[in-house]
Image 1 (cartoon, rainbow, N blue to C red):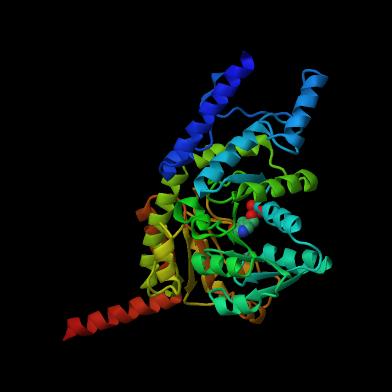
Image 2 (image 1 turned 90 degrees about the vertical axis):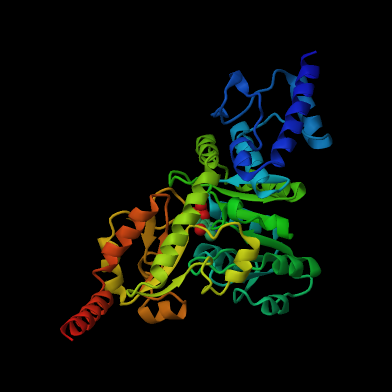
Length: 436
Ligand SMILES: *Cc1c(COP(=O)(O)O)cnc(C)c1O
């Protein structure tokens, strides 16, 4: 009787989830993956704070083993490293948001990337990644994976001929790219990227952290796996670390099995914070997009600014592809100040709203000088070689009021010598005209 009732409820939950998954992205962000009926009639997903799960008796153990090993699986859990109901609910929501069959959460974005690569690569394999990628991802490939005889080829972002040419038949196993990239916000042509993978039977993986599923859904373009550092926009409040991989159910299951061995699981509390953050993803990303666009447009013609990189500006090399495949251009704006390391640092120190910090994607605006935060140990020349100029600034625009952010930038830029010279030039011109 009870089992029949539960089965019926389970079926209704399944069809409810399927219906929600066809709805808009903010509806999915709020309701996606959730069971309508939760323990104790709780509206929110309860935090199941337990390391392990109990069995009523030996028959219960046997039923569980039969179902998981020989059957179709079951929704109950066995041990915290293999799964947790709070974590599972957030995974279902993330799968719904990215349009994938399943998702698996990890303790950080790097845990997601490293576990995935360790799970899918045999010894002696070859991988290809694009340049301008997260420094730790490249470091992992070039140091750790190299120890297992896995070679990495780095190809220039946007050069699909180079990518295809770098494929070694039967040896290249995965193509990895970020989109948009950090810090130049290059956008991969996902259709071309996925097509190269399909043609050569190589798995494709996109790190979509900077875009979020609101702005871009790589699976829709044929990409095999999507990963996010959920620490950024998905969590959205700079208060947790998490990572996720989304894709076809069988691939995700293999990653979940790998997580059970490698152990990079997320704590149920962090998963609950992530769930809470996700509910406002649609509205937050909308405001990030609008603010960043306003900031990019304001900076682009500012006399104290040398150059702006934002995929929503026609001056960006990937404006065309971004406009075609993205619903918004994201919350990060990169720019170069007219001046050296010190002029740029002084400008940053004059800002009142953004905090100086690495990371991005939270409600608070964060600003950093990559030369100091990520490349402090390098000389100016070495940084130039890596494409990191001393005057480069990465502005992770938050969700504050647009006008306040623009006013703050203007007051801080007014101290830049190039701007002062420009203003002095204008006033001399004005005075001369006045005298005539
Ligand atoms: C932050 C970040 C990561 C790493 O994520 P963590 O959660 O910090 O481990 C990976 N990729 C990109 C693009 C990131 O921005």
